Image (cartoon, rainbow, N blue to C red):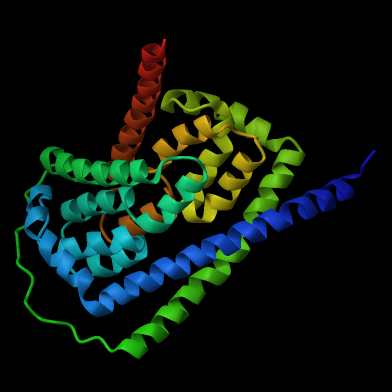
Length: 311
């Protein structure tokens, strides 16, 4: 009979190759996406796109310059959106609405790649997340107390960006994220394997069964739900991919989870960051939970209709 130490060593050895492979895949995706975004920024495409969306943002009760924060968050991450938002004179209402839109649809290229690798259509992910972000922005503008932020056209000033310093900043910023990401992905995969080896995941799933039932999710997705809600999709990708590859959870079950977490994940750090700059936490959290609840049950109904139609 194996000792506890032997079981730990065996689990680490078994998990390490897959963890490193997934980490390397994530780093390649991150470098490619961030490089393309940096290049588009240099060429002025990001600013042009923000300007194009400016009039549209009045539908969400947001000033025109909020478009830049949304576009930045959409293609990069919440940090870039927050960096723009802090430079704008937004009240709590506008910050909350914009934060919900960004939380639903941020880091789209990379997080879509992660969800596609676990079995959900990339086109569907992009469509669902984008549509939900716009719908919730419009809905919150209708139901939240307070007045709409005034529309302000952005000044027609072309920002001068020097290519090589921009590339240098890109390399340094990407490395700052890539190194801890590799370490965290590796550590997460090892922890997940150990929790599975010693039966802890079964207890987690049992404890969260009522929560999973409410959201329409299978009980076996409980651990992945925790990972996505605490660490997000990018950092939690290794665990999700490993679970699917090893057949511990079916692609159909992960697809349901993906519909939930595509608009509601990273509900610790990101939420606290947006709260710190003036957002209202209950609106930011509960609005996306309500939307994720709808998405999962709609997906289940969609499957049922297809099943009945096939008979």
